[in-house]
Image 1 (cartoon, rainbow over the protein chains, first blue to last red):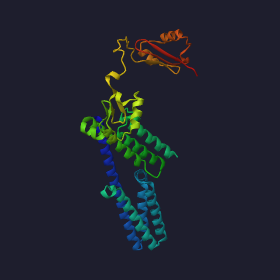
Image 2: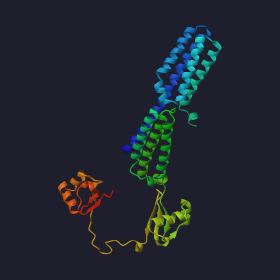
Image 3: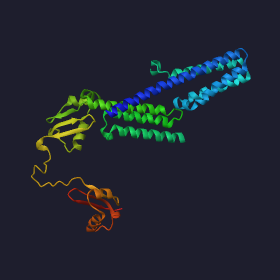
Image 4: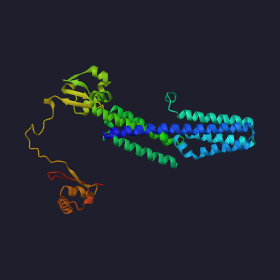
Length: 126
Length: 224
């Protein structure tokens, strides 16, 4: 019976871990998207310096959690976000409104899809 | 390179621990569920070993989940007879009173060649000599001949059959196993004496030496 309890405990631990990880990724991407949306609003008002600062915060937050992100997700997907963030920052530096808006929208969509992929849903299971 | 190495070591240890937890079964004696588990684990472990773009947990989590489920199933199969039959199947009687059950052979997809091969490997060439041949759930064939065709035992022949017990290895490839020697109540002086009796100068010249519970000694010298 000890083995049965141990096995059930491991399965429960794995289930809890997977739910926590999905929740954490969801929270992180949601907060990043909110901040990126704010940055876009600032850029649209012509406040480029503040938009750059907000985007820099998002990039820093992402970088700070890179270890966990690489451990939890496929490395290609994490790399893509890093590259997209870099592109967005470049357009912000150049203050190219059209290209920045397109790149930022693509980045927000990438973040949404990443969270969606980790979400414990029937859609993902199937 | 380093990542591949570390991942390989982690996954290897994980698999060894998992297989050890499955119990002391030989590969040839795997139940269907264990065979499936072995195949799946091998495949799951190899992917994160080779593809560094995949996180390690992509291999570790499914392996842990499979091992846990196997442990749960093994406890349930021990506790419940019906569940055991469902998971492991039931033994099939292939030969009954010398007659081959063709229906059962078809059901278990056992060919005549395989049946004859199994019988030959157990020392029988004629199915009519067999009282029962049972295909076990692990795929092996148990053959029970008629009582009159069973090899005669020493007891049946009223022969003196002295029990010699389990032989203990005293020298293994030139190395004296002192723990075994002491366990049998002997010492190095006794060993040297026995070697001298057999014209063996020293333990390093011995490939294998055993002693059974009746004091019978088997000695094989090194030839290379």
